[in-house]
Image 1 (cartoon, one colour):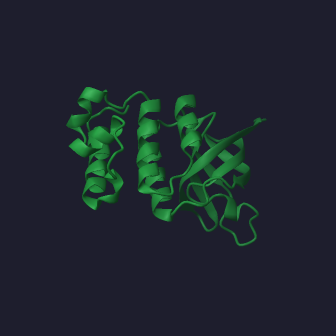
Image 2: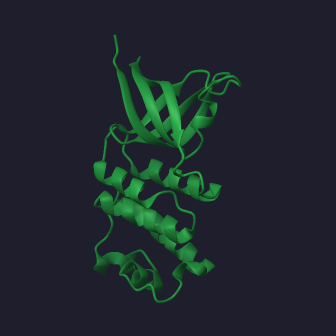
Image 3: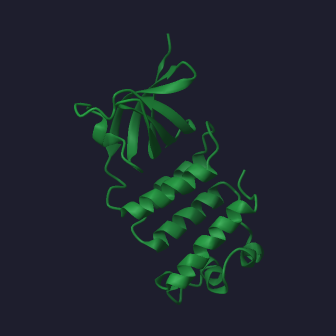
Length: 188
């Protein structure tokens, strides 16, 4: 008989499976990124229905099943709910991209919990930088110019004397720099 397993996590994605079931991708403290089968979670009478929204921070009760985790219980924690939806989706995609399946990472979990869910683009950028640093893949200071604009490099080195993230062009360049960094193979 399989044992129950309790952990905390952040919902990164969910996919419909059947009439009322879902497969939920969760970045957990203890297991890393895992896929969880949630039986009847989309049914109108499901007690878990509102607890598995995108980027919800959740306490989970899981059980190992035929090659996958099965969800027994979930309870959302109210720490990320104040954030705009576009930031939640961006962070979820980012974390799904950089986290390997089934490998716990305490440094990354700590960076995520310390940063909280971003409510501004500046906080979103800080979360991404903290996550990449936690993974040990953020470039050294001298390499930053290979990925980011001059203003972003100055900002990342600690010069916050001008508002980098109030300029749409700089925001686009920063996002492009993160994408370029991920594509360059710095992330395993």
